[in-house]
Length: 395
Image (cartoon, rainbow, N blue to C red; front, side):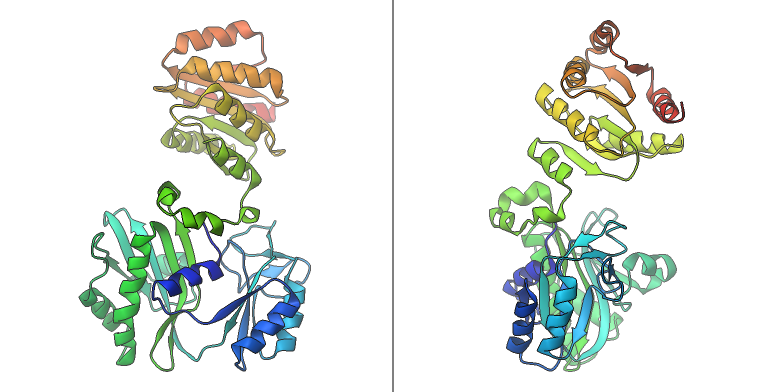
């Protein structure tokens, strides 16, 4: 689950992590009032959307307006807020459709001496949480990893203790910090790592992490994502969820107990098992097609869930064909076919449907398909299925 920057900073502040003072604004007047309350001569007005690249992003309706703006007066804050609120911000992460900005975060200006990169992630090679730091603050970490991997520092985080002080000290020296900044790092880095562990985060990114003129480390930005599988331990996080930032179909799928991610292709996929779903999408692309979604009905889905899965897939206007790929273990092939035939009658299939089945009760399932009289294309294996579903688009 993703949250907004202002929400992340509120949580970080409670955990003792240094963040700038800021005030949420939902109207131009509130933005002007926030500038005055902060009491400085410089502030930053930040668009709040679930996407990075806001500073370089531009609004569709106001091409000259950036998603993050420095202002020097309450009037400037008000004018910029008026251009930002209600408009669509397009960044490198939103795609061309962009995101509508309904909330702003007005934050105090800081005396910035250096910008660094900080990220805490779950690292498979290290077998647990890891802290990443780089001198290249403000840069996309993917670009740094590709062009200057030697500039990325990594340290494992003890799942029980967190980040040790000696690790923070070593990293501070490697970053070239001195004096007060080293002492600040000895406090800042362990607290952030403790926040990551205590709240079951899947990612916590501070980019940039700044060193002020006084040698204090401060989180100038904050992007935090929580592990959905651990949210039952954090009931208070539910109120932080912004449904307007999420794909409606993904919300519906979540409520039905399905794993669904909308993609940009035109071939809908219904698969049981995440690994099989990834393989299915790979083969579709290998044979020249583009998947329209990732949809995993899981190993124990019932007829109602599978019917809902078909409804969600077919509601996407971009879908021009559907591939069903089932390996029946716990999930029985005949259950899938029962739901498929029900959906065929109740929802209606106006696009080609290719079905590949293997596993538990597969013979019964194939008989059900053959005797149904429906216009359904069957496949003997996954390669055959991928070739046939891609072929329907050029037929």
